[in-house]
Figure 1 (spheres, rainbow, N blue to C red):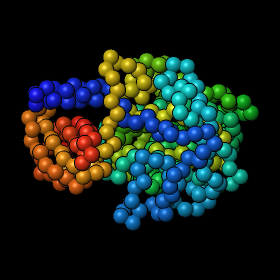
Figure 2: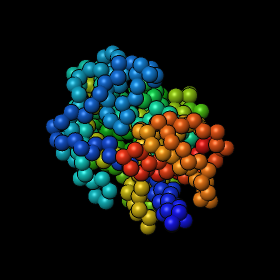
Figure 3: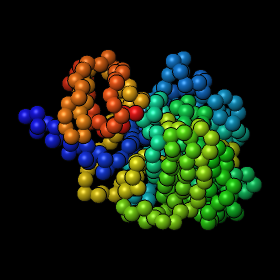
Figure 4: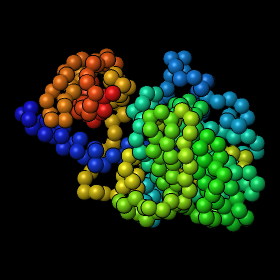
Length: 339
């Protein structure tokens, strides 16, 4: 029986490594006309005094006119893009043009290094209705801080004329180079690819209306280097309402493969990365108390122990299969790299 269970786990983990869908439920559970932010950070400091409000949209901790102006964004009817997996699903965010300043909202993903060194893809539908002809401004980015204080890989928009605009990829600021002209009121599919090295450096690429295919294209719309040390891991997804941009965005899919970002089937079912198990170096963090079993990739059990929600291990570096059962009997599994 144990061999059967281990085989089932192994099959699940093979699915995981091939599918690699991290998250798609950024807007699940919302209804049209409801507000987006469910919490608000009082500081940008990541510590016990400002704990993470995980897996939800929050007002970022940066204060001032450029980050906390305007009202809580509302959600509207979903966007549509033919062939995209999230077309018509859930809702979209209505990013109204503010009278002044800006407002930064962050979806807090992680407070450790779960999404550290590696390559990630974010697919999202965009529909802009206006952008400044004189001032470029970013409105979507990743963040290395769960409170919204370390934005990188910034999608930037700038108006060209009354009917068209351009997008670009910025680093810690707005883009300075842009792609070809796009049309207002038309829904586009954007994919951000970001590669980070664990120290904060890396590269980001922007693709617009790529072919809906499992094959990653060889050409891109815009690109930018990632500098500094801010983006050691992806801890949040940021949107910024501006006084210079009006847009609707929705249909987010975060993945570690191109095919999964677009929702392309590769013959193996997608399995979401389990958000109830997090890894920080040799520490395993769970949302609840329960029991953890850890297996080598060969299927040998290396640890079977109770946890109250934080388990410090002395495991050698390597990849492991982790099974967690909470006290209610709910089972979670994941594949993890212990450093």
